[in-house]
Length: 270
Image (cartoon, rainbow, N blue to C red; front, side, top):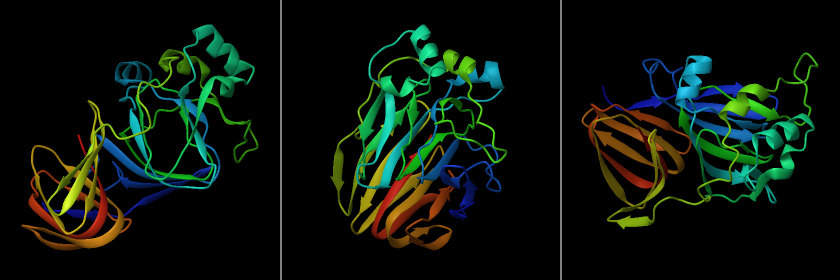
């Protein structure tokens, strides 16, 4: 099996849209362990937390959710919530959810294009209004909302909160990482590579191709998300034109691939 160009799956929500660029909804990828999205937040998302694997299996019979964001665009003054300002107790957390003051202890962070946020399971977070991110996450839909701005759904009912489960999932701590790449920008012949996030569930790198790069796919699949530019991917299976917005699945059988052109590519793998 050679490289495959995937068609995005659009999902509409009360706050904006998600385009699923690599997912279990794509034919032949039903067991894929990663979910890669483009999230466009016209309004702020709920303040939420995701469980780690053991708790998720216990409560939901599914894997947990660790994720990362790479900021693609944002309006002037845009911000998001990234962890807590300081450690709090379980009792304070519960009371603040109940009296709707949880935002007072959430860490509000201004964003700019190119920022990187690593969000391990257990960390409180929320994407803010006017932000577009590429999100790489474990393939899981488990989200526990703790605050949702008193918004109502299509039936004019306030959207459900998941307080009891959030109390089990949250770590009540500030973030351990900043909002910058985990590794330096490394210049190679024809391209540069920056390690954005590395964790037990995935590795995400930013490739900035000036002329060409060669990639040998081995051991696991790779996902290529073209963020900017255009070029050509050549493999033993033929050639494929690349342009902004393309999502390419490289199975582990793809072998040696060569990309030429001027592009920015988000490369993700397990």
